[in-house]
Length: 79
Image 1 (cartoon, rainbow, N blue to C red):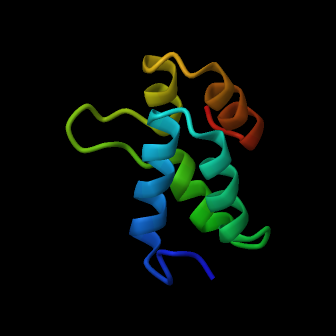
Image 2 (cartoon, rainbow, N blue to C red):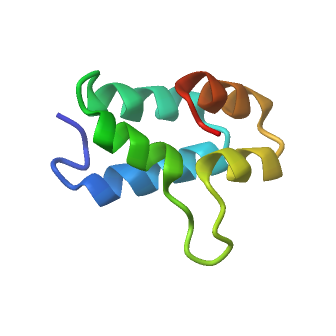
Image 3 (spheres, rainbow, N blue to C red):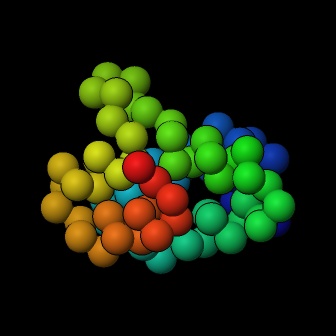
């Protein structure tokens, strides 16, 4: 149902990039695509770290100065 199909890594990477770039509309879309019952995938989205800097989506959003994305991620349970 999503443009990444069944590729969880693709969705998780897209989620990270959306956070890093402050795209709350994309965060919401990918979060909804994971579905309410897929807590494992949602957890992966919030906890995945980028390879080089090891930042989580929350830290990437903070570093980019994306207040709305930070607020969205915190509301979703990021820490």
